[in-house]
Image (tube, rainbow, N blue to C red; front, top):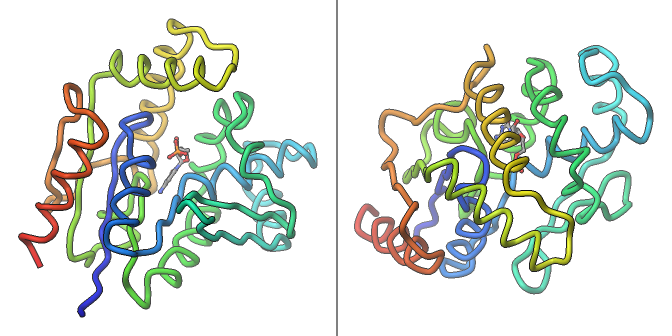
Length: 223
Ligand code: C5P
């Protein structure tokens, strides 16, 4: 059986990670959450009091750190920074609020992209992020660009946080998501953008399972 790479990009909260994880399970592929990698270095910057705007210091921090990812028993992503599991920590509000500043730096991106390309070399990955179809895997066999309205994305995030028993404010989420989209779309290196050959899917009125089914069939049809 031929293995391929599937790239899934889109703005914050469009459901990429949930969908990518489920799609990977259907194909028995490896799920690669590239946002988690940027979150991990941001988490480490917080721990070490490294300035988010200092590219050289962040780069030194990144190159002296071991960053490992694996898929857990339920297909979920497990992230290890210097062998410490930080799967929960990287989802904190502090990390989420600052990750886009860290992800702007060209040297940080170059290093991350290199790692991501290595992982995808043997194919059989579903990789989600912002620049997968445009920069990381421009030759990915199948590319999707998932969108949803800002209010729908904030609503989903809000429901998810409430379910987890976390503090959550809908209006703050709308603002945070819009701000992160703006930084991600306007940065100079590899901004968030639909690849020309990506299929755009507006998930605003679709359930997770509907999106997964849709992507599954679209993928099967194309390869
Ligand atoms: O996907 P997630 O929301 O976890 O990504 C966190 C942040 O990491 C994004 O807002 C973006 O700034 C950055 N990111 C990126 N390129 C990727 C994946 C994530 O710049 N491929």
